[in-house]
Image 1 (cartoon, rainbow, N blue to C red):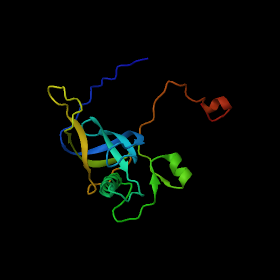
Image 2 (image 1 turned 120 degrees about the vertical axis):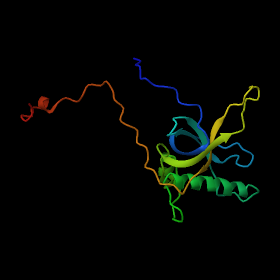
Image 3 (image 1 turned 60 degrees about the vertical axis):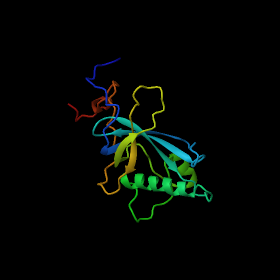
Image 4 (image 1 turned 180 degrees about the vertical axis):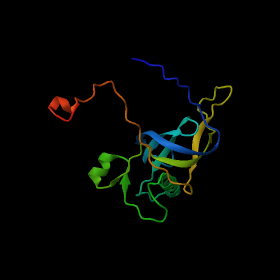
Length: 183
């Protein structure tokens, strides 16, 4: 059954600036970039809380075994990951943090700390991504991107989604069980 929710479409993008971003979804994959090929990559689906627009961002997990020409990429991706973790309050600057995984099954199997991504919130500078994939457009489409996750702002609590209301019948009252206090 469909219902009218008096909803409006969210804007396609947000103006550049500082925003609170919330992780609303993610997909684990493998990076294909020339300097990160083969590394674990998470494509984050983010909500810009102030405007309601949605965007995507990537977190690439640097391969700790890298000792080749990709060492600079390893440092850069490691800094991006650290900034994300500090911005969302998962880690604190200059404090030790154990090895972790964003995947519960992997964390359990490997004895790592599990860090769930969904609901994490943090401050970031949002800008525009200049690389429009469709070159045939008369006017290029503007897509938002995370320029940098901010680590010097207040730490925000994880977003907890409200309970979903269903049309299921409520549980039977205690009177049905013979409770004399029920009236």
